[in-house]
Length: 81
Image 1 (cartoon, rainbow, N blue to C red):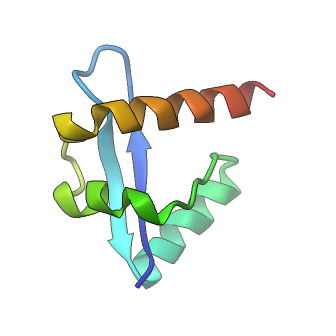
Image 2 (image 1 turned 90 degrees about the vertical axis):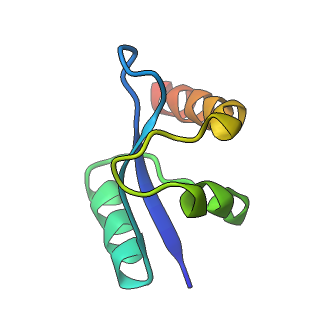
């Protein structure tokens, strides 16, 4: 089953936060809304552990910070293109 999450980060926060998450139809809606808004969408099954470890409103768990930092750096670079 497809999973998706919307991740947000602001420098004043201690870590990135899960703004929305879902499976199946909810995941498809999250992806569609992001694409409509021009938000970068990454599809990577290896990130499922992060989605399984946290729920909407949670900060990304500390053990995921390195991975999330790389993802956010990639997204920021892509959006600057």
